[in-house]
Length: 192
Image: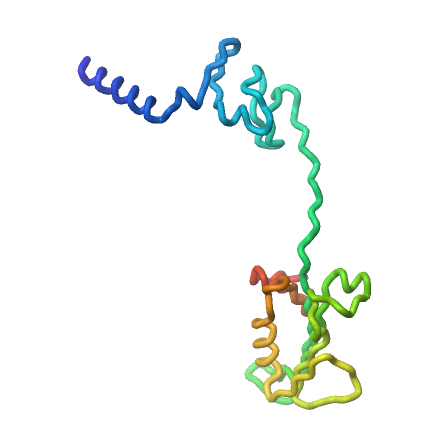
C-alpha cells in the first residue's frame, strides 16, 4: 500500500511540474487565494487584489459585495445591405386538384439600401445600377423600369436571378408579403 501511495505522489508531482502550475499561479500570503498570474496581469492590472474576483457579467475584476456595473455598449456602424422588395401577380385560369392554381405571370422587384431610402439617393454602389426589375410574359411600355425581362417562365427566371444575386458587395434582405429572406444567412422569417 505504501509503495502505491509513493508512486501516486511521484506521478502527481511530475504532472504538476510538467503543467508549469507553479509558474502560472501564485498563492496570496494575506488571503490564501491561489491566483492565475496571466489573468491577473491583463489589461494593465498588476497582480492579485484581495477580495476581488473576476466577474463574467461585466468581464472585469471587482469585489463581489460591490455589485456589478455592466459597461455601456459602444454603438457600431452597421454594414451596408440591400433590401429587395418584390411582388407576384398571378393568373387563376388553370384548375388544380384543390381549386384554381395561382400561375405567376408578372414579378416586380425594387432594390434599395437604408441610406438611399432616407436620402432618396439614386446613385449607389450598394444598390447597383438596376433598381427596378421586372419578369413578365409580355413586354410593356407605359412604366419606366431599369431592367425588363420578358420570359415564358417569370417565376423560374426570378428565382435564378435572386439566388445568383451578388453577395460580394453587400448582404441582402428580401421582402415579400408575409416573409423576410436574408440571402447572407439563408434564413426565412415569417412576419405573421
